[in-house]
Image 1 (cartoon, rainbow, N blue to C red):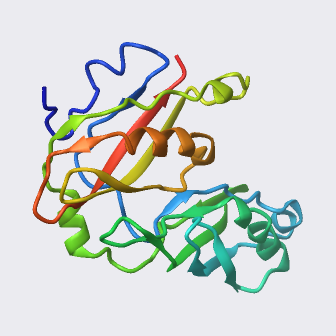
Image 2 (image 1 turned 45 degrees about the vertical axis):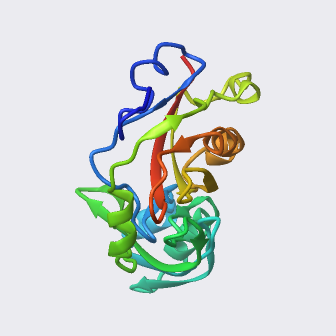
Length: 230
């Protein structure tokens, strides 16, 4: 039986803990250059003692793996302590690379601002949403199209990951699937969200088994998946 769009696996996949639940989404999640993973910097103790506050703007090229490549940091007012604090966590950040209409990741540009404030003696660190180019409206429209899935192989929580005592209870991932006019999957890309490396192989392998209803031009579909351990 054919499955309607955005109701994939909700009734069946969530019954078994070993299966991944392919969740509904009310709107397209993709946004070029958006911040997918942020590890916030600690407020440097020496800066707190001195009452130093300020902002750090991080901007530059985002590679296809979601990492900043040699970003520029602008600190206002100048503070070596605040700059070092941000530089120390940049390697953990992941941004959304550009997604083309053929579901291929490309490099892009992004900018994020980190604020260090002291409110009534309490240090606070906050951040902005990434400023990046507006997504291709034709791509977004394509991902909003309704489609039917003729057959699928449900992603399964990887056994090797489940053995890790620190394995996440829920790992929400997003894949982008290029579907050809014949309904066969041509390409799968996984957004560099938290834990995506542990689930990427299973997600790519499973989604490549899916078969969609043939269409004149094919499409780039956004598939959100929640991997649940229990």
